[in-house]
Length: 413
Ligand SMILES: *Cc1c(COP(=O)(O)O)cnc(C)c1O
Image (tube, rainbow, N blue to C red; front, top):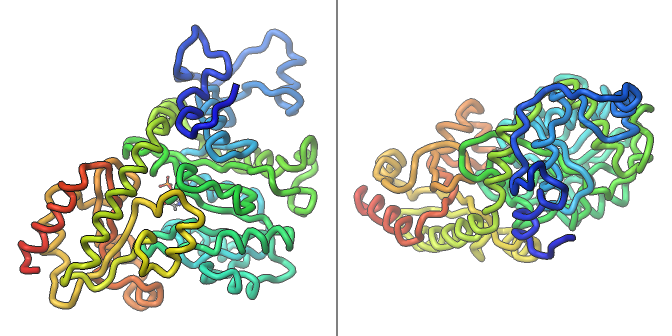
């Protein structure tokens, strides 16, 4: 049995395998070790000759059910879950790269990913950060040591969109591993397999979990990359389908050895959250369009960054690739409008970090997430001191618009 619809697939995925007692959710297996009647079977599981459960750091039935669900959502062949999105990215790259390798990354990155890659750069991995909104910058950065290219779909906070299709075509031509962080779009708005991604990152903390109550991350193998072309696969993992060697090595060298494993309770929360992903994101994107249309016409606003607006430099790309242009935007204030005065008047909109929550969240980017970088680096990244990022929730549109309106009126705008 398989289902056509995105949500039908999520809601009924667990039942495709037999579940204990006919339970409709995969139960929470709060368990670490597994006993076997036949010692040969235990050995076969350890040797990877047979699927089975060995030890909780590497594998757990509740987590496996979530991994299968994410593979189905992304149209991939296998998924490994991690304790957080950062653990997923760090463990994957650590398992695939070796000293002397070169990688190319978009310079428009989630702040902690940027910080992580800077640490890699100090640990013998050579990294070039390029403007990935055009494939040309990627082409120019390639060396014979280049192993992989890493991009995000919609960058946060300025919402630049990578040249996803052209970079995918280029990676395919050069035999490079292509990693796409799909967190901001989620598989509901965009499936990176369509542009040739080899591996997909999802922070499950954001839209997939969706309720701001649980952390998690995932790496999905799309099955599109032939790992026989990749020099860094260790011999024990070169068995079976070569389109899955990458995820096997990530599970062994990344998940097993680093141990940033997702717990079964967290996996359960994420699986429940994922059931309403499409419903939530549809409302979030509709709210985002209403709010940015309002702000775009407001005299107290200098600029609005949202791929759904025609003025956005990658508006057409977003329309071609994504179901909707996302639930996150940012805006800059006109001179003379006080950032703190405005934000402190928000009543519905919460002042908080995080994104992808059911609640609309706002954050003064330069003074929080990008504070550590200092004013010069911020200016070079196009982060204005008055930039406010909004992660749009599922509230009723009229309440969000009214909240913005009263806040501007309250500070004279
Ligand atoms: C939040 C985020 C991450 C990291 O995820 P955590 O679950 O918070 O560790 C990675 N990439 C993007 C694009 C994110 O927004």
